[in-house]
Image (cartoon, rainbow, N blue to C red):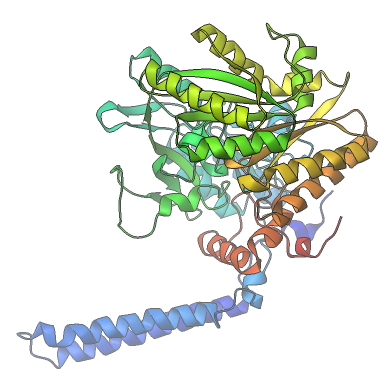
Length: 560
């Protein structure tokens, strides 16, 4: 049961009204002064009074900024006000209006199972929180209607798409609210083969895009490859990447050329044109990459595509992670055609053998899976030869190159079956998957210290790393609540360790509610407060995905 104070409508503070009044007064004085100047100057000399008008208006805008924000401090009392939401009756009225706006029963749902699915995830173990209503828009115009209704009744808004997030990014607000399920906006709108780009809605998956391109005989693909169910909107919102990152980078590269976004005001913007590059102002597209739906709702995206090149797969085994990582650094610095390079520890290799889905039995050693890429079979063969020589210098043994496309697919499938293979290590277990990222040279220390910590706690786990960019995942297994608490403790220490090694709390899973407490330590107070300032400016009512990404101030002082 929530207290009445949880549902009070947002009432702007007296200081805010005072600031707005001051700004209006300043602007009015500026316009009055400009009119007086224009009436006293002959009409045949417009250039003589234009600077006065411009200067006056500029002064008014400066005055507004100073009056609205006061001193250049990001921790002033006005900016500390917590958002206040509508009452339960407000929410009921909002649902009635939404049903009236969308005449189809398929668009607005309060079915208990719908609410449960959208406020809970089997992929993580963060606290669940149900939404009040689920709305399924079909267009940008639908999203605008939803946003305006949310603003009218002060209802929190949370975007939902593929539902694959591991850090609780689509959990409901503590007071409920509207979940905007974008899965129905799943169309590919335009394919520009000559320009190597594609325009789509946010609910379409990256796998569906690549399958469509393949069926159409278009030799292009979208190279960002997170979890199989991930969709473009969620991928952009969490700043995703995947196994291809060593070759193609992450979502924060130039793979998202522009986005159409509905802002918290209900305004619709397009961040830029479709040109491959632009120096026109700062890159507003990137403002929404990694923002996790806290600044706006993405309704359309232009993504860049890459040419499909021939690939093959190889595997090699090492005495330890240190030798494997040093080999990878050497390989990357040679500039050969590597699309992916994945580190799999000895426990993961053992889990593949136990799971039984593979056609082969692997040596249970720390191993690297390589995916080679090149325009011709000769170039791939040359890359494989160079890599084999390098890994052997670092203690690599059993280097095996796939002899056919089928064998390459089977080898790579063994790597991609990490979750199901890992669960085979401990009968009746569940798994907590998390990630961190450090400079590649620091990865051996991170893996070594983490594995030592997990052994001390008595936890069964596997380690998988996108070692080409220092991204390191663990799947921690547990069977009961006591072991779950040990897992939480291990994850916390792993994150702290990564940040100490000049790394990040999340390489590609996003922040959500699971990692937000670490942002002060990783980014510093100034950077976090700058992020807060952007959030408050764009979403002054605090309605868009509250409780995600931005840490509570107490978090920076809390210790586990």
